[in-house]
Amino acid sequence: MTILPTNNTEWGFFGTMADHADPAEAWKLAMPAIQTATGCPDTAVRDFLDSTQGRHFADDVANGLFRCLGLAAAIDAAVARWMAWTISRHTARETGIPHGLPYLTGFVTHFEIMADAAA
Image (cartoon, rainbow, N blue to C red; front, side):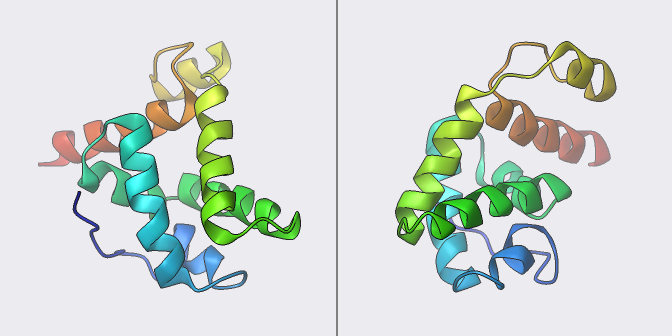
């Protein structure tokens, strides 16, 4: 697995994690955890983490840190939670992500499709 560097050090996952933990360490743990869970390529995971959704994911990781989980455990808990949630009909209508897809897979795939469309 390749761990690509962030393209967004100020915002997204990286920037948000800077308030709670070493963002570089969090990035190194989050990239492979999300890639393993979703089966999506590294570029899609990076784009997800660099996005507003990545910021929300970081907020969830921070919640785990506030519950006294270690960084790796907080990331794993956030991945598990985001994989357990599913895309609602409302979100499906707004984004085009298929209804019922695991939330994390849906949004990472969404960024993969957006990158392909822009290429």
